[in-house]
Length: 454
Image (cartoon, rainbow, N blue to C red):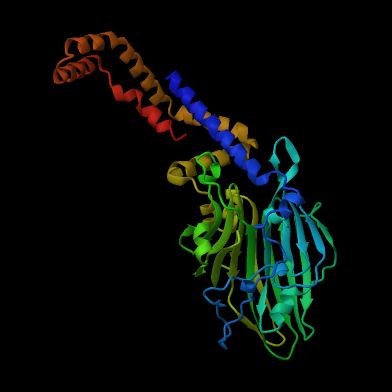
């Protein structure tokens, strides 16, 4: 028994070390500029490619429809990758959980730092960045409108205006960052990003006011990009077992997409009440569009740059009318409480594997205890105590059974010596001994088997 415990603790120690090494690999200080310059595979923000052409609207004259792309075309790119010649200004947004940088060129989220999550406990000043403009950690989220010919490209590349360059939550419960643009012909777009206290949710609104004399057609889109380096498949790398990549929910089931498969061709579906995201170990970036409309989801990988796009339905805003497109973003840790408050299906991004039936109720209990004590370490100790108390009777019975087995051990040995050449007689004699002494050999193993998943 002692040897078994030693092996278990050794295995736990090795797993902890592997997890720590993977964590340092993903979130340690980025390489210096000299190293980046020598890396030919690193995607460069601002690199223009013929494959990153802007998709057009459907040719149909109907008021609503889902934008379509040619089968081999890559989804909409970031503002910095569609040939923008004018760099926007940086808007800083600071909440109790976020430090965000927004580029006024299209209102792109180009940096997101999580204030409460350092890379390591001994490096509290180095925080995790889920969005970044650094080449080897490149990540961004661009949202906007695909409009009729001419207006679309002008909107993507235009520098939007905002009343201030710094927004801080301070004592408020929420803060709204307004960005505006107009096409000079009476159409005005106001983009609003809403941040709330303690939340990793970002609500994005695009309000279109059509002051022109004709209708104006547009469709919402959100594109999320991330540099995805090839995964080391070594058996000693925890990334081999922890999924890191895109995930899409089609309204009924979720699907994790393999980066190697995406290199061969893009993934495209139309779905209602779906969402798309990118998992990075314990963290998530997700796009959650309006649930009651059909949207198109495109995911592709090119030169280790993964692109996830969500396209909404086209609307015609009549002259003198206004219309608002709404999208929700999530950029943060996989906090199940926050995820389920946005959409219950987002909990699918937390994968417990084949132990889901046991892990879900245990996590629910752990969360309830944490809500009272406010400390995860104390919560784990209390939940462990509760589990031990629940299985006390089984453990007690197991102990008694094992004690009786030790008492009859000499007689069992004697029977084995007597019937060493007759296996059938030995089995019959052993069963009679167990029955006479009221001993059940399996009783000592059952509690251990039940508590093994814990």
